[in-house]
Length: 438
Image 1 (cartoon, rainbow, N blue to C red):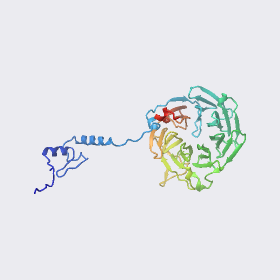
Image 2 (image 1 turned 90 degrees about the vertical axis):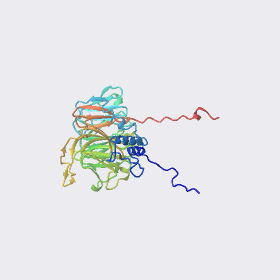
Image 3 (image 1 turned 135 degrees about the vertical axis):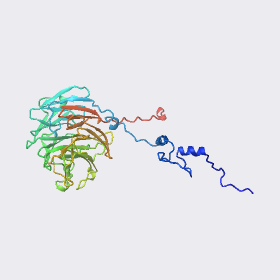
Image 4 (image 1 turned 90 degrees about the horizontal axis):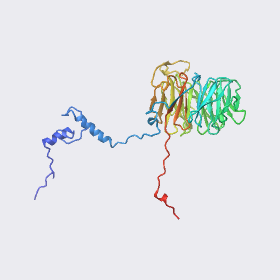
């Protein structure tokens, strides 16, 4: 009777096999094993690091690379950082709170130059004079939406609201005009179909229907000059911000603010709120940006806002935020900036007094165009020194792809390609499409 051996195929390790195994980190003096660390002191050859790199490179072939959307800024402005066009804007207001530029749905870019308003057809490059204001300095202009895309509203420092019709070729006389009750300077405008919201230096918010001569209503919750106003895409909510850092959200259907005038329920910031933007693909998502001495972007979910508002995301930048734009093509948020500064601290707690002047400092965000990813809030790109001075205002084009920025110090406007609209997916042809069932 034969005795069965313990191993059918005994493993014999020759000196040559042992030497080759050690070179590849597969064995030691006792057992066979895999060792990924080839750079240790036990290595006999200096080129073992190269073998490890080759092994790791081969393993990376099996890893999935992150998906890059062609519509993202990383495939557009991040790669081609040159502007598409430069337009002169002599005499543009030096006021950091002004809105001297607006882009219409018909691709007309308008700008205020001293007492005149000009506009250029971006398609044909033709320049026209819309009007010459004889009533005072124009602080803000705003094209209307889809209902009246050729209507341009303008507010001046004497509290007058004027509307011109670009389709008529422009004239010295406005199509409509309203005079404020207190002759307060008009600081911000926002269209909602045929309704126009106007914010005044006194803090009053007026809502006007351009089809009737009278003001619909006036709200007086703000105690400081209004610096920003924006309707959401549904036209149901209006966000307003003032120079003291207070923000209100108004519900048009209820005819009142979602947050009342109680000091504990205001949305408070530690800097002036000029930059306001509603998300086009999530209509209850609101982004607000502040200037010195805070310099932060906050993102709010207005559907779940409470009596003690808390932002869903906060992006500290220590740089003045002058405008914000959500991308309609991807989940990204663009911000334009002015000067940078060091945060004002007092006794280890951030000072909320806006009267204190921060210490200005240089930073890559100064005078830049920056794009953030949502919801990670990761910074995707920063175009440093897009202008030599502060970018006081910017406008997103009708297709949501190009951006115009303006710099009063340069008296120039620049157009940038930021995003790309996604191409519509073509329908896959089926074999049954060539035949008809009878």
